[in-house]
Image (cartoon, rainbow, N blue to C red; front, side):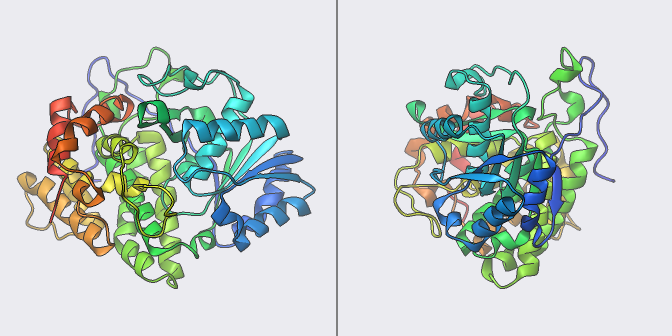
Length: 435
């Protein structure tokens, strides 16, 4: 705990934190438990959300057959968009309203799970689309009540969506990525089966794994919970509370596990142990950031992904340009952590050590560079692009990227240093190229 002490409570700020999480079942083969889990929740008719790729895999049949064997009626939805949009959320909601399930199952990556969350939300509590969308882009109104049960079954080791109350999408009218955040969106249960990642291509494993890294690293270095203003009522304490002793446990272990297993998981699809460990790291980091929150790299990533022009990554559908979520985050990370290290040098140095860097001679002034250097090494080792320039951006785009990122105040305010527009512009400039 040497680097994990928290500063004294600032007057007017919170002195407590809340721990929330889905019920989690973890282990190889646990997807076969789905029918029993659904039955235990009293479900008799479920909407099974997935995507076209997963629907063609044996794991889809495993999930469906488990539900049917338990006497559950199953209706399927597989038209999930690779990067969800407000339009694709609306289509999924129309489906949910038509079939009227008494519960939901999602089998897929973050896009599938987030789409299922949104369909559950808007079918259960109908409202104009922007009603629940995070302010200032949306109205940010609270969800008025519980949703129907949702069992999330992730097929990537990355997003952590199976244990968080967040759904991310592209708002097409503004060409910006944003989200909906509410404890009500958190899935009721998560079945985390590492066997579900066996067929993933290397590029997807790498991008998803770097999302895990970012979740853990951003939560570990977030503004401490004792620096967040006391909420008007305890029930209004936000999910993104800032770094806290609970989130530190998951973050530090996720970084340690990832540092040992990301590269073999990417480069050797037959290394089932490495992929299982990455799934465990993703679960730990998801629980952690679901309570602490992420900050600037994710806030900047929404602009990076939303303004993409002509980048087509390996391992993803080639029909439209795309910067995968984990990639859109990690291209910002070295620049951001060079900047934020001043706020908490011991945490930045410890994070680098957990990832595998030699930090024995690193002093407080070295923290940002040591961590950034380790991140760049990992990026190169798993085939990530060389910064923003590697996904098609130039210095001429800095203004648009800054304007796209600045509205993400829910995330930016969780950073340990102020993220003004000039700071964001400098960070985007520093993230253009690393080697």
